[in-house]
Length: 606
Image (cartoon, rainbow, N blue to C red; front, top):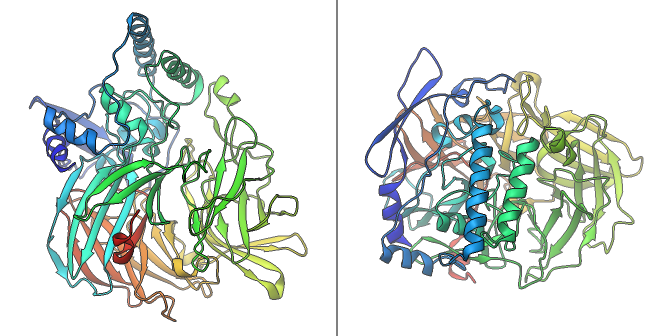
């Protein structure tokens, strides 16, 4: 796959270093097209402002048309096909298919032209959603022996991998940051040295769109709203009916989560099955297959499955926005054997991005952000904040055969996009949940005038009384938006003292991370520096058997927006001091979630 990356790097539409206008938040992006011509675009990018919120009025300034598509020689295409799962050959269309394709393309062109007559909401405007370091990059082959400032700790042996959204094509219409194709960035450590590579996860969606030379699958958040969203769905399924596209093998982007389980690295988004990605002996990344656990998994799986550090089992959820059962729970043995599905009773399709486990229970949130497809008929978004619904958390035995003994506890006005940990306190019959409570709950998906807040909170569910309490963990003077992070994963589901969470300010950027004492509320901050921003901090224990919970290191990708360069920072979690910085050969966009694969597991991959 290395040969194809070289071509991609030289023929992409490349974002150049933004020009600076200190008097405004306007950024200038200059794109170099494959033919060598310049396309200059002035972008008013609220993503760069100190305090972003999404007001209802916004003036669209750019109409996208040209795809960000790499070109390949015949030799390079053959290499890529050999390394892609089920890479389809160029379809040979019959007369009826050609006529259908022309007609459907004409309808789509008219639909897109109509959409571009009106300003997009900021939550679906590509000018906003993929500006600056949220914009995509081409694949990069492995680069070895990267420059290092400081010393990489001897205990760090293996590979840090992080997922993110990286659209292959420039959007033709609406686009949300979550809609981008999945790309994994990896830094491998061996005996004090570091190497880097980044690769697309070869989803069926990406393979087909790359073969067709343009985006054709509907974008779940950026496009599927209102009457035009219904039209795009009908177009997509009409193309499927004429076999112009194949949606039978999933439509997901695999851009959100990563987990290493049963000797496999799995890339996930909650709208599809996971994809198995393998790390090569050289430190490169290659997609193996869309992974169904040897035929056992027949539904989607959310991007935040939980690994029990003691049993080695993996626990997961699957939700459906169209038909019952709307929510299912299942687990896998450490050897990959799947349990029977357990249907979780919910009144309708609910946003279920994350959940939690304890030593004996699985904790399922049923919150106020729901899916109502009927809202599209009324011209709105199917992702809705249901103010009349009361949020609740369900507590179910991990090994339950059904949900008949599931206990529900109401937690009013609570929406946690992520849950960092949970544990049992038998002496008080309580389940303790640690999560970031977000208001407004649907602000990631829909425009609003209220400024986003994400408050690290302790939620207690009393299983005896059926009552709940909720309190902010940090004092009001220490309060900052905390989103994306983790506890020591060797203690997941057990009582933990520390959480390491991204400081999501100025939203949606991450200026550093906080080490929070969950018992006392004490906060220690690590700020990346002037015009430096990052993402999720990953906690890597020095020794899995260490008695000190914070004995380890924080790994985080950091981008310098002034120098337009990226690095991987390694911070001592006990002292909160920078230990080392790995200078990366190319830009790493802001992304989502990651994990670490130790050297032993790398050697034993399936």
